Length: 252
Image (tube, rainbow, N blue to C red):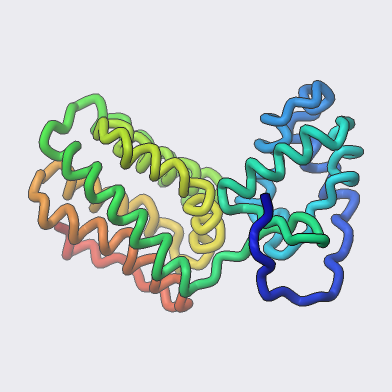
């Protein structure tokens, strides 16, 4: 199976820097030798999501097989797995390349899909919000706060994702949860692009406090409006390069 060829600069992509390739292998250095497709997927996914491997970069099967000390088969399977997650695209007769996520598709497709899924799930959660979930969400906000204090974008982003994952899973909305996980690699990748654009990283834990307050209040319309601000408005503003500080006096 192949996908249509994107409009792409015909100039061959440069080989991956040797130091970069080796750094991926170190993610699971001890286990990579076991030729596990799953571990190769994990290492490459994290490198793509974090931006270590940039959009448009070619992923050469023979180079990766040598790096992970495996045969071409698990590398090929790993690249198809990443293609199913939207992180890699196969070009006929050219190979596999890291995908791009144009701003118009992010705003017109990814963000609305995410909003639809989270709005459906969190409305369900708000009807029966348990104390343990509140504590778990508060814990993730604390981790975001600690990350912001240190300027640690990775810590902020992973706590951000976990906050939303906990809320989604608590909904019990099977299809919404499955669909949300299918776009999660794209969501994480977008966070790694957008989070550093905040004028103040403290914005991230603060906006999640606002969202948690809306969840606890239980007003479905206010919750939907808060989610829209959180997912659509804030992200669109950052994409436009005009981040604004959160108004602490105008929470839900």
